[in-house]
Length: 170
Ligand SMILES: CC(C)(COP(=O)(O)OP(=O)(O)OC[C@H]1O[C@@H](n2cnc3c(N)ncnc32)[C@H](O)[C@@H]1OP(=O)(O)O)[C@@H](O)C(=O)NCCC(=O)NCCS
Image (cartoon, rainbow, N blue to C red; front, side, top):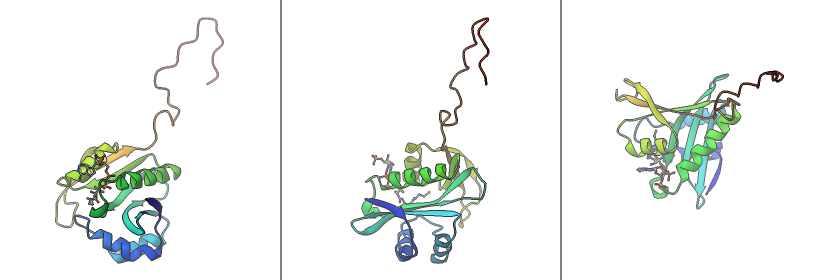
């Protein structure tokens, strides 16, 4: 399995993979646009010389929240850890770009995806009515990307200095 950023030569393979997405598929035009613009990351996973899966993340300038826009793995290659590897890779990019959180939307009926995201540390935080083209609602899911430790937030209050001891410099 090899992960790499997508390039314009991958366009056909990316569009073919969308067939395995439940609905609201990304069009060729949309992929072409996303491949050209810096506000998106498209990462693909190659397996046996073919593209077996991809993840698309959108960024907004200055925002600390990244949005997982699409994640799909070809049915012949599912349950081999490809989605897990793709998600970890795009989460790492989001952290490197200064994001603190990853968000996504998923159909409430898409139990395989919900299970996958929950196993990957995401939690359901709400619903969005009338989200999909067919008028159905979406679950909102998110995951903090930076731990308290990484933010240097102490896990408990610092000990009070002993009486007479010099005050620590903050
Ligand atoms: C959801 C999807 C991306 C998972 O891809 P995958 O490469 O098969 O997932 P992984 O192999 O990395 O799975 C990691 C873990 O997620 C969970 N998981 C993945 N697929 C699952 C399924 N069908 N049912 C239940 N749990 C599942 C498991 O805990 C799995 O670990 P395990 O195999 O050791 O038990 C894939 O099923 C898919 O492409 N579905 C169609 C597109 C889609 O719905 N995308 C998400 C839309 S928001």
